[in-house]
Amino acid sequence: MTAIPIERDTPLPRPRTRALWLILPAAALLTVFLLVPYLNIILISLRPTVSGAAWGEGYTLANYARVFGDDYFMGVLADTVWLGLKTTLICLVLGYPVAFHLARTTSRWKGLLYVFVLSPLLVGLVVRSFGWLILLSGNGVINQLLRDWGLIQMPIALMNNTLGVTIALVHVFLPFMILPLIGTIQSIDPNLALAARSLGANGRTVFRRVWLPLSWPGIQAGCILVFVLTLSAYVTPVMLGGPQVKTMSVLVVQALVDNFRWPLGAALALVLAGTGALAVWLFVRAGRPIMRGME
Amino acid sequence: MTLARWGASLFLWAVYAFLLAPIVLVVVLSLNAGELLAFPPQGLSLRWYGALFENEGFMRAMRTSLLVASFATTASLLIGTAAALFVVRHAGRQRERLRMLLMTPLMLPEILTAIALLFFLYATGIGTRTVTGLLIGHTLITLPYVFMNVAASLYNFDRSIEQAARSLGAGPLTVFRRITLPLIKPGLITGALFAFIISFDLFNLSLLLKGVGMTTLPLQLFDYLRWDFDPTAAAVSSVSVLMTLIVVLIIDRVVGLRSIRFG
Image (cartoon, rainbow over all chains, first blue to last red; front, side):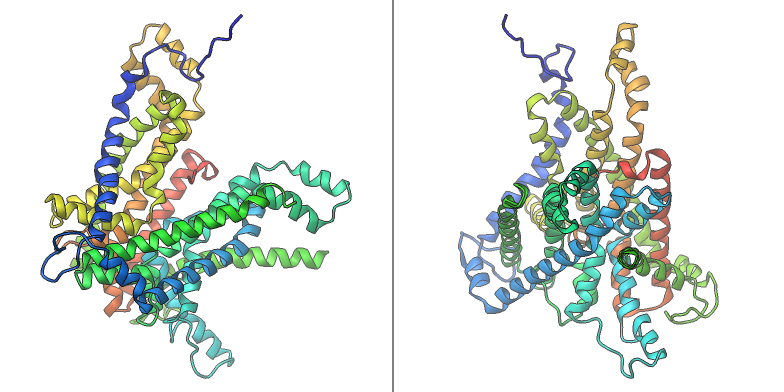
């Protein structure tokens, strides 16, 4: 007897092509307004930057040469990547215990705690950054409290520097770390940890050999999300960094909106995206041994 | 041991407080009776909400934001639901690949998508002077939210109910209207609410794609904060916080917060 291949979930033997119209609008939208524009932006980054027009005639690598040859651009790129790494790491350290707690707790407050994590995500970026502005500014709430308690005489600089930007970015992107982690940790069978315990492993070993490798997919997803989002963040660095802190996105918007140098802006944005993709790739590669159980 | 437990719970509460503090603070300060954004507030009053409703700039921006968010939600709902139906039920072996493709707008950096669209609209002559750019961009970004929520409700769908209806003589349209639609309603509602909120808060994309002389609420607030630092800004922010809260409550009622999906 030969096995007849049966496709699951398609019990009615209808030709699939008849349903194609369902996907057509989405396919058209994504092709025309995402795929084509992305191909187009690559072409434009290869156009000469000229004054008086959006871009010049012919093709050149001058914009990329300009970006890679300029110490200022490279410095800002390095700062941006560093900011991304810092933010991601802090989010992981703060987010993992919260995700672990939310995934495992049986408390009746679970729903409310979930709202605490989810709501910040749904409140606009500008609003949240504004909240930090009120907290961190020179006459802000934190400085005022510290002064009232007599801990400081002069206000300390909590914003218009990288510190303020980092604090606000961690706040803005922390839910993106916690949510994927909750999903992964929930799907881990707690009996595995118990089994390891009964076989003589101590708490630290159980974490390192059971929880960490099994929750790695969530850690990876959360880290990638936070890192990529931080790299392209614009609002928060501008609002809390002031004129001192420059990130790549700020330079990109400057080149595009303020200086009307589109091809240069396109090259800057693509170099930033390429750097992000490279970092993500390295991170995924480095994580493979952990996935295999940290032998 | 108990000390470690205390430490752990202190840490957790500190993180929760960190997540909520700036948002709660903004709402509290919007109710300030005084002239300044000062803490603690000098008495309670709704005067800054009055100031907000008399501020023509904010009101116009809010109308634009509501219009764009409504359009993007409707468009995403139609396009995303159809796509989810295809991907879950008819895509066969291409299912995973198609699912990833439909999620791409979410995974690409928003600012790069915004630039790419800006250049494209300029190059094709669709134009960057009208609201069209905003409508297209917002639909593109909100599509994955509708898609993933509707697809999730379709995965847990018992299709034998549909077949039963068919065998009892119902036509395909009747089956869709009377069986499929009611059963995927939670996914539709969650997806739509998410799409609306995400669109309402979108910044980078709106910054680059807004037409001449046009502005959305987040952009207007951002501009306002450059020059003014008074409780009107807090009142605007609180309106957006309130909206979020309502949405979260509705989602919790309809499907339960824990079933929300990210990616």
